[in-house]
Amino acid sequence: MGPRIERRHLQGAAGRIEVAIDWPPGPPRGTAFIGHPHPLYGGTLDNKVAATLARAFVALGWLALRPNFRGVGASEGAHDHGEGETADFLHLMAHAHEWLGAQAPAQDAPRALAGFSFGSFVVARAARTLAAQHQPVRHLVLVGSAAGKWPMPQVRRDTLVIHGEQDETIPLADVFDWARPQDLPVVVLPGADHFFHRRLGLLKQLVLRHVLAADAIEAAPDTEVGGIDG
Image (cartoon, rainbow, N blue to C red):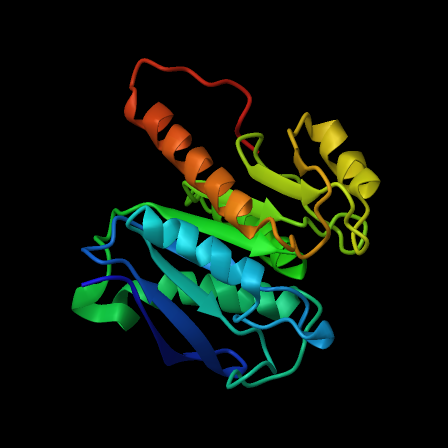
């Protein structure tokens, strides 16, 4: 049986949260939570970049969850400028295991956060909260990072940051200004715009390679990687 997608509803602080579930063909190796772009500018869980991020993790055997932010699709509530959206993400992550039931990954399975544009702001905030609670995620992927648009927090240096050279919505210079004080690498796709038109295949490959390489390092107990904790 190949990958499949279904939609369910979860009760959150502001009401119903609509979630797309991207199932891998076999038992999930981990869970990735995907954030979509700004809802006031048409962003939904069906955004092509968000869907590409989900497909990348599914290709690696992970389960991917894509919630619609407040007021989008069947999700209740109203846009909350990142505050309520972050709370909903944390709520989803806290309750996903019981919500998914017997089909959920193992309790100790790794978790990842990935977001595009406004979604990168939300998942970076969620990652910061989880790290402060000593529950860090295995992987953090930020695409079209919202630097300069919203107050992006500092992230770990092993975060995958991907940006388009010709991003007309979030200038590359703003991303460098955010990343520079952190010594945070930025992967730049030459010629790519904000929505990565005709670059989605490459975007998926970059995520695949990053996760595989990071997991290989994690599996090598004698390998020491310095300066990646945020």
